[in-house]
Image 1 (tube, rainbow, N blue to C red):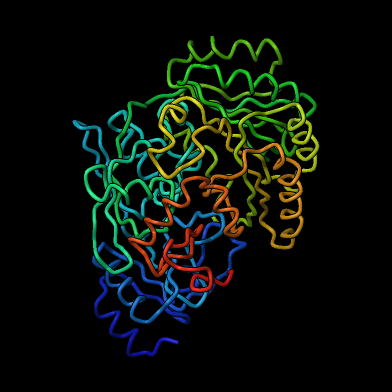
Image 2 (spheres, one colour):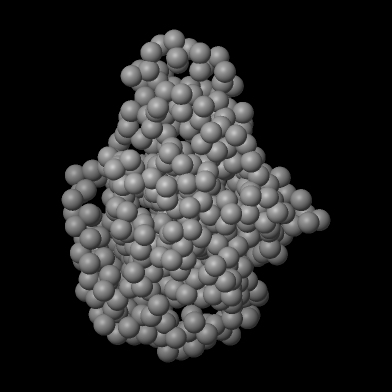
Length: 470
């Protein structure tokens, strides 16, 4: 229990805002994207800059406080907030500076991807990210980062040039290919295990207008479409990206009234080129199995990035399950059809994100992200606005996952995982785990940063590292 004097002294060293229970603003400050998470920290420190982060880390260390790091607050498991500890909230560190001559972008750790998309689009540039623009830059990047530009430009970490970080001892470092190279290797996929990243330096790529949007088919066509898709997306030009979805049609435009709230399957396309070229590439599916509805056309890239933000606002209840897949077999497709027919709520969905192309051309040893050989990243999400449906969405997601997991590659994308235990973390990092544990021991030997998909420091035994589940 923190004494009032400690809190008063900390506020005196801090430029940002400090909340404790009972303060006006505390309840809003502790909320995260996933409303299923309801944790009550002892302190929330909204940092204005790296100096505030240093002060917060040192205070937590001196008072043996559990610490969680919050960027955009989108983490599936709600790991940006902890019970009875200190939340180091980076949301005020929100700036983007584009350097068009070098095609680089400096991004504060409190930014969301909508901030980056807005700033880079003016220069005809983009940084590979995800599919929801309200997602935080920090969490998505540190876990790997996949989305509409993955096949052409790789994971988000493949465009990461450097990070500024505050370590567990309160020191400030830069990690890049030239400085603290081992740390830079680790943060590219190793999550928030190694320190607090306060800013990111990215390479940006030429992206401006894309031909994009969804095609929808009736659920009875899903098996045929999936079999076409598994061949097409592994051979298509890398400028063409498309993720596959099992979904319920949202109850609003641009979807026609007769399709709203119907269970269907979809592919959401993103082609970096002209509409004419996209139509030529997509002619095969339009001829083979014409979609029941499509909304594919030319649009600015930020419009595509924000297309689903309104459907998935902050405050829904989420339960996530995930796997990597090397193939999409007929047996796996049969299981997809079975469980997609039981979508429990209209927000609930399954996505398959293609990971070939540039992702496969980066050596597996180059970054901590270990599944460079995977072809798809699958995520199953039970989602609803009503907390009364909690068990229904959890049970559906777990049953779907249990049916598909035997077909998977073993691990999962860390950004799609709930708190699932050390074995699951080890399965996700595979042969990289030992190297990550050694780097963790060097930079965070006491496992100070442990509210994450935790990698235990190599030097400490299991008894010393026991962390009670949230």
